[in-house]
Length: 356
Image (cartoon, rainbow, N blue to C red; front, top):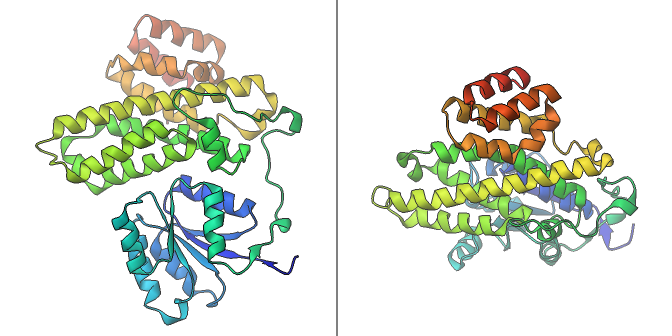
């Protein structure tokens, strides 16, 4: 180990699984040791059960349940023994007002989400006396066993900047594909939530948190247009009167839902195509069972309601259903969907791919 290198321990508070995974992976790959918590209270608990000098720096998300980043920072700064530890905000809010509040509460700096790894590391090094020991870290597992098959440029998608997403993952192909998979697993449920949201829910914190979460996930994978629309919508929800502006809210949410659906479709088609054309990708479970379970649930709901959106959803994931079903069952399902026989399609689906 070089004289200017040692183990650097970072304590992270991040409630979103998606963001927590990428932050831990990027930091670990660069040589940092990371302890991850899900909210401010967990972070304080972790801080208190370890020696005062155990952690060298804290990365603090701002919007978290139980205890948010602002309250956690204030609580930490009230304890003299932790006064010297740097606290950096991880935030999607980059307004001057937000930055001022971070400084006022005792944070030294802030890092915008989604973060660029180079910016993250440069900011960390401003507050650390040592560099992490990068040479003790195992090389990250790559999607491709044969380096010659690893693509230097990912395919261009219409609504997702894959090169940007890869850069935000520190160039780690394996991590980026994991995040794409995670996005396709989690977001069909978001589509259902959006379509079932009532007027009264627009003002509720749970709905606002969902918008904030999906915005962050979208930005991280390179779905910049979707992230931007969600960011605008998030701000509009704060200033709009839900009762008076309900039509404007519904219109904006419909546009977001359509764009989210397109992003999910693009990712799924890419992952299925990639799996069929790269046998080595099977080892990474590119399309795992959780995907088809969630999508089947969504399709069944639409079929039971005789909703015409069922046809569009089926076409979006047609290759995935073909892969997961027996050939005869898939052909029957495909024919039923072409004939708009939703009752028959539902029965076939329930027998071939139970959604429970």
